[in-house]
Length: 335
Ligand code: SF4
Image 1: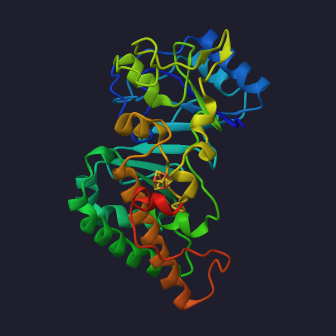
Image 2: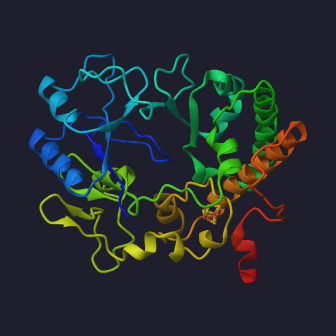
Image 3: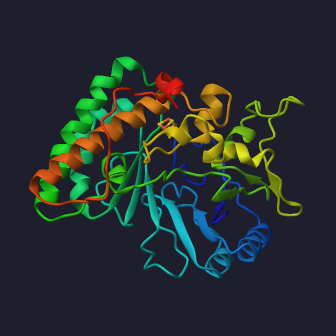
């Protein structure tokens, strides 16, 4: 069931997940489109998540009349670090999200999405670890998953083991750090994935809907839509504000129609449909890279859970089993 409407206020709205936003020219959503989008969200009882543009050197701000429209409904704001939106409600919201492409020195929001390529994450591991004690929820998003190789498995395992040591120290001090790659799986009893096109949908500045912002970027960059087998096209939209949503074969977006994922217990995995489509040309089939990385995180979470339990009782209802594979595709015949 749809729960969230993501509204990209501008072409340069912050990329907050795996896909980079290649669009560099401002193209603001017309205010009438914004109003219609909000009305669509209200009618469907959706929580609005606004994604704000890059403000550069603070020389770009949304026109004043947008502030009133933006605040006409409860919302969550997703904004680039250093570009906290000025809308008249500056206290922010516990669920607002700041997005950084470098390890920030200061985080204003309670939630940080830190987007880094794998190599940079390794190099900046100590700076990243310092954020664990900040009281901010850290969502680290690796931006070059497609380039991950089996030769990097040991490096990733070692990195997460090192971070586990830092997190364990914080738990011993009575703190509750939140770091998506290592602490989420310890808390989950079922899949908690992105659910693009299932629980959330994105409205772009052109008034059209997309499964997520990445599909809008692809359309603007004229990336061929492999899902459309009938007519070669780079149209990735799934409806518009005039005609409503029109998602072809929506069941293929759901977990119960993903043969590998529905048998998997890497519950913290994003299960990114955009990466699925990019890397396997199949929206409900993940790539080897996605699964291996998610399983290294799952196994490291298991190790952290076991270490915390040596100190005291912790999440007794959670059981993460020991497994001997990193890619469910290797054991598919056992499903
Ligand atoms: S690890 Fe692989 S199989 Fe498991 S949920 Fe993630 S993408 Fe799906």
